[in-house]
Length: 456
Length: 91
View (cartoon, each protein chain N blue to C red):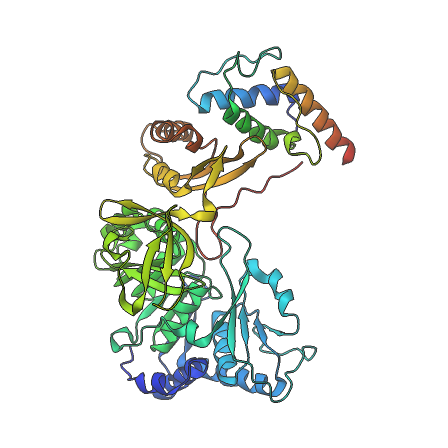
């Protein structure tokens, strides 16, 4: 662990230069410290120290300075290449696009940019920047596509690095990266780790056992994850392995965390502080809930919060965020419901399933399905219908082994019976499939899209 | 897809009845969907999704076509038989 005082570098470097300068400073002072453990928990584990990472940044900086591309689209497979390319682009003022696999089609919008892979070669066919070009360096990412198709958004380096926690208590920690490194949430994790001289632990695969092995073997201290990823880890990973984890902090984001999940996480990781970050690709981090309960305190509504943020709701329950006194409300697309002294998230406005004109928030149905004995995960989505507009459809994952005396069919029947008992008829899933795994987006969230229909 | 149209329709209707907590019963082509089998619009919508899975067609979402009147099991059989035949001709 490094105890370097990085504050001088952070204070002196402008945001675009900050990553490259921090990595170089760390390479100078503690060259052998681990910067990244790639393929952790797998056979091809690689350890990259700060000296090697800084050398990669230098190498790409030279290449990009010579070629002067209009922008760089990163297509590197290795996380260390991606990080080095992004840091070098920032330092040289070249815009950089980090696109996840499902957003690769959008690269057409950046057709003049150079596409760069792990070789760091900049193709000569790409257009060069006119000399004297002084466009602001920025980062292009794709939105997660949870509800609709992903779209490209442009962010300044200031915005990308704004949420990083730079105080000394955050220095030299092991950060687990279970998010896609090209997503907003993933970028936040690797940038946070590198800016604070941390150890970025990237599991070889996202399957629960590999992630658990990576946490234990690499002594990861901080796990940022979506509730969907955490739920999968808690329900499917080897228990004896999980019990050896020394997590100090779990930061949930991207989706709402429900009460049962928070309770399970507390039981499995008694030493971890669990917080829930509310952020959007458009607004960045808005607030953080640290009391281990779902949703946020009702008293926060209408009151000025730290940073000058104000929360309010539309009549239909959509959460509105006012970032400062002079700015207008931003509609978040997230629906909240007052339950006791809390506002709890009931889902995305665009995820609401409309069955014959009646609205069904999918999260309510998912929570109910997960409460049925024998079910560990659930996904609810709208199945298009010519008769009713949409139908509620669901996928469930069963526990393994099944509860004594239960069969998949009996659990499915019990789930439908529980829904009939608690929900209006239009809210009961009409399609209920047992699957081995819930479909997630590359952002690690539960997908709301229908299952693709196969035609013979 | 090997299921015959009448068999697929009978099976889909029995699944709908069972999934909604009603007892499955014999399905005959002369039966009225609403009066004899007790199927409402949600039940019919579910039946159509199940049939799209088993037969690979959804005649109710066909572009440009007007929705045929469906009152009996036999009406469903005719609509799907035609849709399946039309898909087979195209492919």
